[in-house]
Each structure stands twice: as C-alpha cells, then as structure tokens.
View 1 (cartoon, helix red, strand yellow):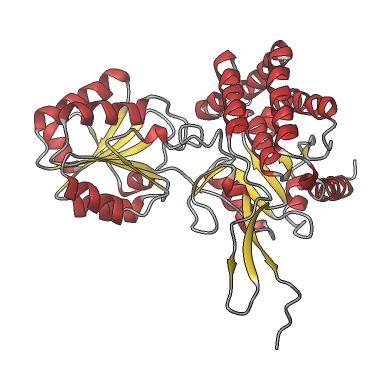
View 2 (cartoon, rainbow, N blue to C red):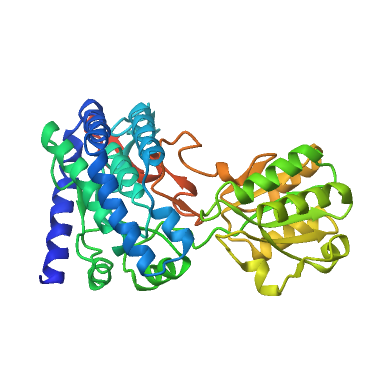
Length: 418
C-alpha cells in the first residue's frame, strides 16, 4: 500500500462528505445513531472476540496495566457506549439555526448560524470506545472524521467500525462521514498531520508523549490536554466524611484515567486523626503514598516525596500528598505543578470555595465533588471527543457544541455601502 496516496484519498473523501453534511437533518442523524447502538448489540460477540485478541497481544507486548485497562471492552463498557449514543440523540440539534438577528443603524440585519468545524482527524491510543464516541459526536455535529486508533486496539476498532458502516448503509448516509485508518504504519499519522488543506482540526487522545509529538509535528490546529495531574485540596473547614470519601474515590475508583487524583493537598489545621484515617485507607487498598516531611511526622512509614512526584501523572496506585500552610499555598502548588485539567476543593467555608474556584485556572473545578466526574458523559454532553486544557476555542470536555462554530449571516433589502 502507498501510505501517502491512501491518506490523501481518505482526506479527499472526508472533505467531500463534510460538504454534504448540511443535507442531513436531525431525524436522519439520530436514526444513524440508533442503528449504531443496535449494531453494538447484534455484533456484541464479534466485538468481544476481536477485543480479546487485542488484549492478548497487549499482554504479550507487556504494555502498562493502565493501557490494558483502557483497552478492555466488556458488557458494562459497551452499555456505556450505547448510553452515550442515546444521550447524544437527545442533544438539541442547533446546527444551521440562526440567532434572532439585530438590525444595525446602517440597515443591515446581522445574525449568527451554528455550523460544523468541517473535517476532524482523531488520533488515539487504546480506548476503543473512543471510536464510537467520536463517530457519534461528529455525526451529530455534522463533521466528517478520520479515525486513527492505536495499533494495540486495531481489531476492536475494525469490529466497531463495521457497526458504523452498516448503520450508514441502512440509513443511506454518506459512507465517508466516518473513516478508519486501518494501517498500523506510523507514517500514516505523520502524513495525516500535514493535510491542512483538508483537515480543520486534530484531536489527539493518549499519553503525554503521543500528544506532544502530534502537537510538534502537526500543521493543523489541535484540541488537546497533555496530562491529568489532578489535585484535591482539603481545607481546614472541610467536612471530615466528605474529605475521606472524596479523597478515596478521586484516587481509587479507577487509576488509569486522566481525571483520577494524583496529588492530595491537606491544610495543616485539618485534624490529624482524620488525616490518619485517610492514610490508613490508602494503605489498606494498596496505594503507595509519597508525602512531604510534615506528612511523615504524622505517619513515619511513608516514602518521602521528591520534587518530580508533584509533577507526576501516575495513572497507578501511587499518590503524592502534601500538608500545606494555607489555601494560598494550595492554589500556588496547583498553579506550579498542575496540568489545568481538574482540581477540587473540599470545604464548607464559602469564602474559601469562592477563592479557590476563581484562582484555580483549570478546565474543571470541582467543589465537594470527586474529580472522577470530570467527563463529558457526566456533564450531560452525551460523550466527549476529548478534553481540552487550552483556552481556544473550547475548554474542558469537548462535546457537540465544541465541534461547532459560528458564522455570520447578513441580509438587507439591497443595501449598498456608501
């Protein structure tokens, strides 16, 4: 296969498909999404069989446990994909609808219309669920998308892509609105990143190394987050039960995800007996604790944290914990070491809460809430195509609206510029 010619063809087909997206109303798009959901049921056994091949291959290659965890498909995760599809169906379709409009003093009427971004390139590791989530959001938002999953999930992605293709055929939907790059040759990605005449945005999802490489090589704008070094800060005014429950859930509910807490910050005035209870629970579960000198005074069997630990996204049962002098100390720590992803405060004092949410400049700030809720599905977006820690043009979980833009519609009764 000539990789460059193959990628060029996919890009040309995607651009052509995107120009037809305006011919599909919400009813047709929702019908496609329902068909995909139904096809996940019909092809369940084939999908699981393909996924097991990927899991076995990943184990043979000694991939990290966090990557293998993301790779796994089971009944629960397929049901979650289907629930995401049905949430996307329920999203109000605002494409091609115009604002009321304002008549200017010069006589022209100015309106705005919501439109798709165009062609999206999606590059991701593991996570075969991204194939369905990305396709569904792009279908609903009128974008065509070229998918390139990791080599470790290729069999799973092909099985899921068949569910999408069959849904397109049944509903007479443009076959090139969603395309999967089926080669594992890395040069396919390199060439894709040069196709700025066809592709409007690249969305990478995966490890920090992958995303940094894509950003440095891409001639196309990206929507991205590099890592998820998420923090929970326990204020001196925190309710002890909330502090315990949230600090445990944020870290241990699932380790290998970008919204899991990696660093716990605790105000020095928070009662030591409650700190000890949290530490003992981590030890009981099997979480390795790396703490500051003040924490070791509370529990001497803790590993002394190094400077690098405060930057680390562990994605494993390891946590860094620091005792801080004040909320300002906590905010400064997050500003220095954080990744602008998700950070939480546990407090009962409204002044402290307001200060934290104003000064912590992350894409999601959680108040007395687990960081694990930082997710497009949980936010009611149906699913997310990614999370952005950038400030242009979208921030946080990227759903339907984040895949659209606005254009101006200007009209008059033959007005001429003097």
